[in-house]
Amino acid sequence: MKHTKSGAPSQRMLRVAEEIRHALSAVFTRAEFRDPDLHGVHVTVTEVRASPDLKHVTAFVSALGKDLTKEQLAGLKRVSPFLRREVAHAVRLKYAPDLHFQPDTALGYAMHINEVMHRPEVQRDLETDKDEP
Image (cartoon, rainbow, N blue to C red):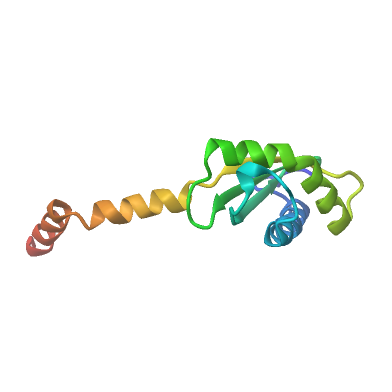
């Protein structure tokens, strides 16, 4: 289970990562863990990347379109043994992978770029560029 010659993840890595994403999403939907920093937080799993040996996975998460706080990420780390067991029950693998969580900042970055693009000075510059032949 290695990366392909082009450096891209193998089909197995992609398939397992997607299955783990679905399993984590299901657990987060049920919100069965009791951690004060995660109380009332709706965690969204946007992407999961698996290591070539499938023993480690990195889940990119956000809080329903917002960035998670440091406390919430720490809460995810605290409940990761529970999440690992849940993933092990849902996804049949030889080894239950270690779960690592990273904030998904892509949505926040896209919203920032959208905000910048709608500023009056940027709109003026875009209109000026249209007028030039």
